[in-house]
Image (cartoon, rainbow, N blue to C red):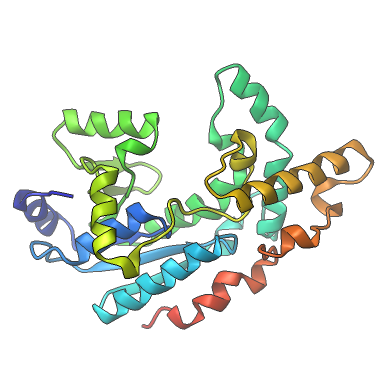
Length: 286
């Protein structure tokens, strides 16, 4: 991540605070460690984590280490909870389990869209309502001159490559995000995976999982993503239960009981989130 002084002069002049979201994956971890150690960055950084209660255990331990480090550096930390942001939506008074189950019922529709070349992850409501919606709502409570970061990297997907290439053509690292209603900074615009890995290998205490993510996911099931075999197994088993329930008379959003092989590493009760137990000590200190 090689950013010249002019970029930070621009940031220091136009923004009063930077909010950096971490997912527990290596890219957002790398970006945070580089930004917090950047001598030319003069505005304060706030570290954000969006707690869905569905994260992998390895993700949560990575987040815990990052929050500890942030507090040692005097960086404020905030944990976002999706539940307050479900009010006035079709998921009001629902929890992560309900939203996740409903998303799995949409896999057949997603398969059809995939065959037609029209697939978008937006068909699954879990990412939107459990991850993105809370951040969007939180952003609108911040000052107008707050700057948010995005840790997307071009090597991850074609869409991200195209998006970052467009920024590169504009000689920019910034974009105004309509949903956030704030400016977003893309520090990893020109960063490759080798640079990320090399840095984290030199700082092994922050070496993290290949990818962050949930312990059960319809996208993993749809594409049979095998980077985390346990996640794939849990997701496929859960989908089988959804299909069995849908073939009968019961409402799959109510009747599915998760068996022990799924619940072994999955806390579906959002009020008893695994992440709450691990990072309870990281409550915001006013």
